[in-house]
Image 1 (tube, rainbow over the protein chains, first blue to last red):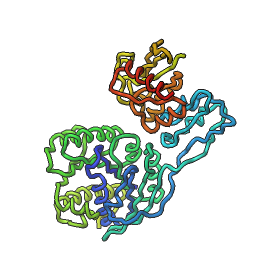
Image 2 (image 1 turned 180 degrees about the vertical axis):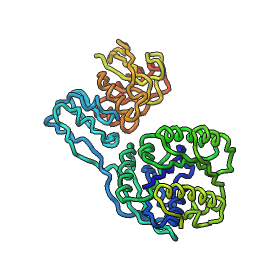
Image 3 (image 1 turned 90 degrees about the vertical axis):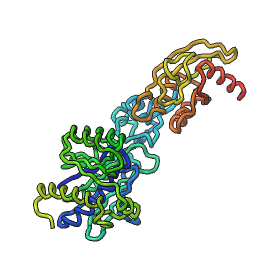
Image 4 (image 1 turned 90 degrees about the horizontal axis):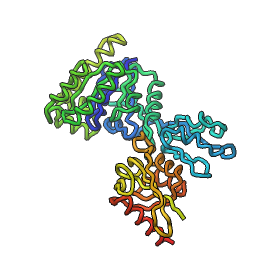
Length: 304
Length: 117
């Protein structure tokens, strides 16, 4: 299997835009391989929107551990409150502990800490959902796996891990993971195990700042990194390019800010399909072709 | 009778410090014991807030701290939804005020409590 992660640090730089175009191109050109696109931006997944899908496919619950306290055994000793790292358990004087569901990350530390075995070992709650959706768009044929947390939930990493596991269970030859913004645990869990990390950024001061953060994470995890500067042309690229060199990004791609890209994006069609001769489509095609080169290097075979 | 108040405070804590503009991530708590009848301040303590730099659940951690310190009245900015639930669960009364000194907040809270009675 070949895993490529599309990430970037800053939000709104075009991670999903690049990921959906990459999935479209790779599955069209390398059609003997099974391709899965995993949308792991679990707070706001939108690959299905960019692919023009009306609805998502088969839904399954993402269950995480949730402590259920047996109040007949609980002595209000406070061991669970002390050990809870997310501050999800509270206890008043002379009152039993109470758990805030949405603050609980399901780490189970309270279960292990309880000296009276008053906390159940295997109770669960639903954190979110995974959806498996077959995608057919022109010559492209692949599977979209979407992870989504329920509204108001605060802990994304368990949902990212669950959705990624779902994607892997489909036994893909090529797995594209599209991460959310940021550089926290939910992001490192998503990019873990990648053969290639593509950091999508934009030529702005914030784009540069957050690019540095994600480059530190990716390089720190020992991964090969390429940088894609999306909306290229809206500002000077110097800062972004300097960072790419400093953190040993092997390649830099420039995806011009173009009318075709914006139109395709708003219509929910990959720009490579919508307007193949648009400069943004050309840049994405060059990027995809190089990714295909790496995939074939690892998996064998040729481009059709 | 002495009434124990907890006031999230901006910098150093104490009667002359400003009330913090947020609860869960306030730097410190000023704990004030005040005589309910005379309004006389009997004791002032400053405690660290475990929620100050917490990764998550700051409001609940802060509330738990106030509960552990035996606070009966919270005086400070509007608590967030989790902190609100936590303070209520702990049976801590909530008096909201911000933008004033701790000392003024204590006086304000006393007036509020008297009006309620």
